[in-house]
Length: 124
Image (cartoon, one colour):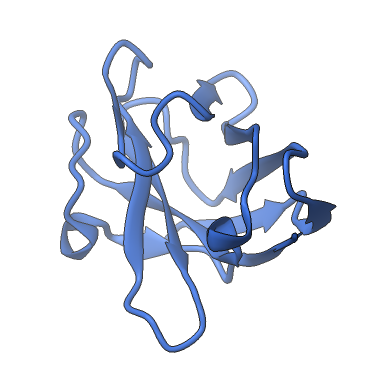
């Protein structure tokens, strides 16, 4: 069993930055890939970014490429999402997830454990 807990969400003005963090407990995530997803009100959950177990492979949604950076610290069992140049359309609940495979994927159905999420709100 894996428990994930996100932190770092909040309210920021357009153009600002936030750094989300996801901590894991119950199991070492060193060998597994992880991802960030988001869900805006009345919209489907969508892929944001993912990272392989080593950090060597990363994927990003086109909408965040060049603005968001995913990273991980295996020694601390954490994954982070640095979000820069935030826009109102980035407003959503952001959740981290772990996939019990070494390679990441954009497919949310391929992830095995999920955190509760953290709210990110961007004002114009």
